[in-house]
Image (cartoon, rainbow, N blue to C red):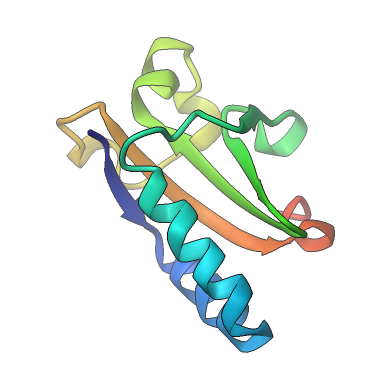
Amino acid sequence: MYQVLLTDDFRDDCANVRKRGRTDYDRVKSAVYSMKSQPILGSKFLTGNLKGKRSKRIGNIRMVFAVCHECHNNGHLMYNGCAICPEITDLNTVIMFAVKDRKEVYEV
């Protein structure tokens, strides 16, 4: 099992998704819950300014996250720059960064 940590930006994004409609919000909640058991399933590595992070598709919405053991093992620490990284002792942790419309999420 993985521990899922939500950043403040992710929480703000969730509030915006909720305004879009209950269906999208429920799908995001379900996807976040599934991250506890299978965070990598159905996701892909990102490139460019989001290198080291992953994206998961939920309809027209994308979640951007990092899996700590991948970050450490693949040398992505310098890309992700997680402020919380020094505090994490369990590398089976997923850090959720953003959840937005696919047209907006990659403009980080």
